[in-house]
Image: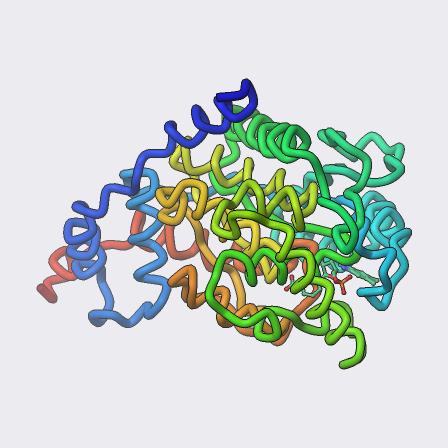
Length: 349
Ligand SMILES: O=C(O)c1ccc[n+]([C@@H]2O[C@H](COP(=O)([O-])O)[C@@H](O)[C@H]2O)c1
Ligand SMILES: Cc1cc2nc[nH]c2cc1C
C-alpha cells in the first residue's frame, strides 16, 4: 500500500461506530423530562443522536463553522452563472464580513473559520487559513480533476485542521463550502456513487439555464466513463471531485474519530458526506443534516444517506449558511436533554 493510502487507512480505522445500544437509555431519559411525550418533535431525536455520538448528555458551547473554499477547473466550461474568479472574490467578502454567512454566523454566535482549500490565487488576509495542497483542480471535462496524491493529501489536510480545532475545544463541527462550478462536481459524485440517473443528480446551481443543465449532464456522463471502478470513492474524488470536497471528507473523518458531531450544509457538503460514508460507513453516525437545499438532487442524495434534514427554507446558497442556521436548534436540543427537570420531580410521573 502506498504511503498516503496507508495514512487514509489509518484515519478510517480510528472511526468507532456510534454505540446504538444506548439509544433506549437516552430515549427513556428524554421521556422522563417535564413535557408531554414526544412534544419536542425532531429536537428529541436530535438530542438523542447527539448523546449517542459522544456517549453522554451535555451542552454544546463551542460550535464552529469551517468554510472550505477552492477553485474548480470545470468552471472554465461555463457550468455556472459566475466566472471562476468569483470564488476568490467571495472569500474576500467573507474576510470583510459582508457575505450572507457572516450575518448568519454573527446572529447565531458562531465563529467562522475561512479555509483556503485550493484557491487558484490565495487571498492574503490574516483570517484565511491556508491548508491548500494544490491551486485549483484541472477541468474534469478533459482530464482527472486531481492526482491521487493531491486527493489523499487534501483529505489529510482537512483531517489535521479539524483534529487541531477539536483539541482546542470545538465541540461541534459545521461544514460549509465556496467554489464556483462545484454543483457540477457534487452531481458527478452523486451520479457515480448512487444508482440515480445523472439527470436526477444535476441541477441549476447558481441559476444556470436548462441548456447549461443539459451541458452539465453530458459532461458528467462522459467524465464518469473514464473511471474504471465507479464505486471506488477515491477514484471518484480524483476524477470529478474538488479540493474543498476532499478537505471536507477529511474533516468528517476527524470529527467522527473524535466522536464530535458534524453538521452538513447543502448539496455540495452532502456529496462530500457521501464520499466520506462510502470510505468509512461508521462516519454516518456522527453526521447531522442541517437543511434541504433547493438544488435538484439534494432530496434524493439525503434519501441515499438516510438523512432527515432539520430545516427546509428553500435555500441554495452554500457557504455553510444552512449549517450555521441550525446551530440554535442543535444547542437547544442538547441543552433540553442535559438540563430539563423530570415529570417525577413535579409529581406528574
Ligand atoms: O449548498 C447548496 O445546496 C448549493 C446549491 C447551489 C449552489 N451553491 C453554491 O453555489 C456555488 C456553486 O454553484 P455553481 O452553479 O457555480 O456550480 C458554490 O459556491 C456553492 O456554495 C450551493
Ligand atoms: C455571488 C455568489 C455568492 C455565492 N456564495 C456561494 N456561492 C456563491 C455564488 C455566487 C455567484
